[in-house]
Image (cartoon, each protein chain N blue to C red):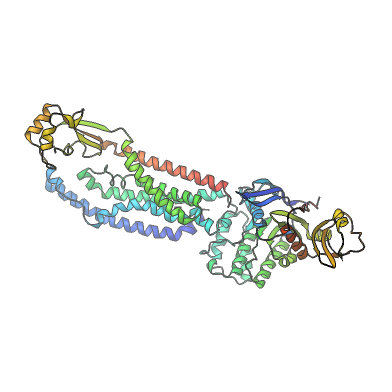
Length: 321
Length: 302
């Protein structure tokens, strides 16, 4: 069976390896450059935080390259996952494959197994390269937990790739035709990714809320901008005020009179608010939860993929060919 | 005598459409059976159920002493060639030989190579670029290379020109001869003349039901064409089953299945039927208005 997979996918596999190698080459070349720049910046700033924060490490087209890893899973699902069963049915080659001395279950196990393994390899390789490439940026701006960065680094790319592949295989099995299956993969993958990253992810663990005293640097009529509390975490919600109702206190008149959008507040407003016990607060996920979050998110996608593969097996076993 | 195929009231419904109804047939081992019937009669459905590709919705099927199932041992015994001659169009015949070698326990690669060499079909050309006749030959050779005990062929010659058809059937005939009784074949078609030469058994499906099932010689002996004057045929209908009656102003032509005894009406002359006449009569009968329901013939070997 493995030989059949090899024979059917060797050309496409070679193309995929060439593309991956090209991606790796660009990322490695750029990554070494960033790393050496980072080292010289470290030396030049000599531990001065303000100096460091003025530096910019990445720029140009290459800085967008890691975002490829957001698209790669869905491409794999479309090109390899969706046709796995659907194209065999369309071309009627399932009549050939399923009347050899190999059961459909074994046929599906081996084919889906190798493709899922390929997805793991692709997602893992791209994720690992991106993680390494992002090292200096992560160190400088502690942004690995932010949406966008979180999705391209660590182990979640493996979860996305496995899920997209499984979605493609299942969609092709249900739809029986490649084209509708591709539509299902595109729509389904984007919908699930957005749902999980925007709705579910902030609630993997209950967020921490920290209160702090207001200083002259807070921005009236806006949110508390300079908390310094959650720089390294995803900020779930941010606002300011006492625990009570913000806008119905005695300082409202002063607040409304404050200039819009400007940093720094009139002394009268600040002292009014401090006198009435208002505090800033930030609700956030601390940076230490980065890996637990990576693990939880990857686990969710792997479970979804397992469910889809289970459905595929049930259909292929039961349905008429 | 062992049976290769025995079905009992095998049925398949697709939502509202009935593809095959109460199909009871028996094919003894070693027979080459012609599965005949008009389009939509259920031939493909029956063959696919026997191959284990389609699950029945009613009745039972026994193929080589077992239910068609997802089991390597069963699959190894049954060779199936679908109507569309499915193959990986971008792979070569040699690739298919390799695939077969990896997927089958008793694979006879030299059989394919020898047969294709005899037919001068290139092994290293993508099968998608071969002619229809060549492709059918490659597919048949690949199916035979499994060394199956049962070969199910679904209209494999339908798309071929007469010469390619003859070559295909010659390959089939020699495979049956080589197997010395160990190979049972069911071959569907609506080209009766082709099948008459290679088959010794017939299953006639019409209107998704079995009309006739048995050895061709037995079946033909059971049927007669009666030619006589135009008269009341009720006495004949009581003793025999009239499959088809053509009545003109002067004469009646009846195709009857003999009901146990000879036709004793001296006004009628009994003539032998050909397979083609028989098939056409049954197909015509099933298209006629309902009312006269024909029971299948079958189980003659018991």
